[in-house]
Every structure is written in structure tokens, then in C-alpha cells.
Length: 145
Image (cartoon, rainbow, N blue to C red; front, top):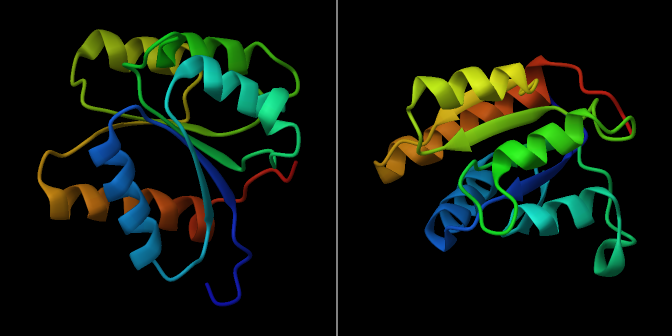
């Protein structure tokens, strides 16, 4: 879609390589979405609740959430978001290396909007992130916060 307004995306990811690949995928895409990155679940909740250094952070239009995080894992972040009236309407895409069926089921039971297993291949990873970005920018209508 031409002239689509950029969206704010929060990436919750502790692997610097995956952060770099996600940034590259966003940069290669046509829409200049704003990507903020935090590296653990506790920091994600501070960002989402606009606490401390994140007092002026925008409310993200989309969260890309890894499950295996330090301090507070992705499942705990997802549960906290979906039980918080101010955060529950933010779409969450679980983007993780886990292919375990129990993680898929638990993520959806915690109201994740999508579950995507990260490809190990660099070019495929970039393509998957680009497709997520395209879908949430061009296809679906996101709630504005």
C-alpha cells in the first residue's frame, strides 16, 4: 500500500545476531517502521508500561517476542501483557527458535496473535521478518494507541 504510515514495533530479543537480522529485514523493506529493541522480558515490561528510561517511549503497534529471554521469559511477558487492560490490544507475534508443540499451544492460550519459528538460514529469516512486517503494515488493521 502506498503512503502507509509507519508503525512502531518493539522487538524483545536477547540474541544480538537475531536483532541485527531483524533490523536488516526492516531496513530492506519499503516502509520505514520504527523498531525499538529490548533484550529481556523485564525490560520489555518497563518499555510497555513506560517506566524509567522508557517514560517517553511510544506504545508499540506490534510486539515481536522471543520466548527464551533472561529475567522474565516471553511466556511471562505475554501473560502480563494480555492481563493488562492498557496492553492487551497490542498484537504479539511470538518469533522464536522453539518448534515445541507445547510452546505453540501455550503461546496461543496466552493470546499470542501469531507464532513463527525463526528460520536458521539468514536469507529465509530476513524474508520471514519482512513478511510479518508486510502483513501487519499492509494487510491487517492495527488498533491505534
